[in-house]
Length: 261
Image (cartoon, rainbow, N blue to C red; front, side):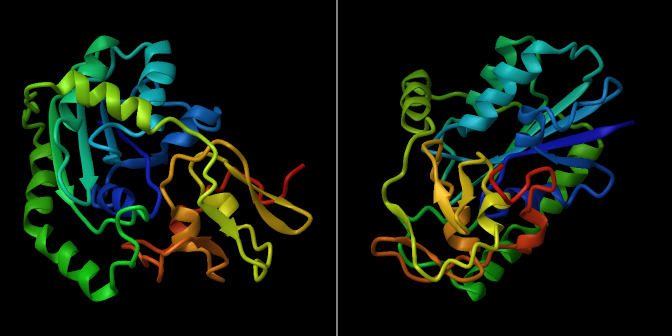
């Protein structure tokens, strides 16, 4: 039985969850969208793991469903599960996932969410400490292990919808579309190491004249800010960097060159 996990992650919380599935093949959602990786035809189980953005699905997850999965033959998929990570609560995000998959003829078999440290700078200006991060990871450990076991046994857990979920879905979808983020800026101490280039899930950063430069395709995951080894990216009022639950090396997109050609 072949299990593939498509993970969207910025600062690494969702990748941390994905790595708990020891026998699964894990790929970033942007690998699918860029054409770097194709979902094998014999995939039996598909996992979609992602952070909640504005009480809804991140733009890359919507694009993965409507722009990638919708264009392929998914008849081999017997079990599809979704896991959302969030700093507060997911609201109707998992039902949004279920409905989005249903729109293209795929049934979601299992949905679950976990609360982990929030790295969203507009709300969390001071980075969550390592001690608090470890505490939050420990608090979900038992439930996470049970979830992994449930999925291994192909248990069914269908997320429920609530009142007004379509309105929340529309608001979330509109609010989180990629755009230019003028709140982020590059400090003079940027060394041009290219870490931000290879970590950005949207390919929104390139090196120009040896320095990082932003384009207009940002989804405000703030991975660049938190994972810059020189702390060379600024966000007004923000202090500290979220160290996360996985090393920065695990977040580097191997298919992406750090130099702009």
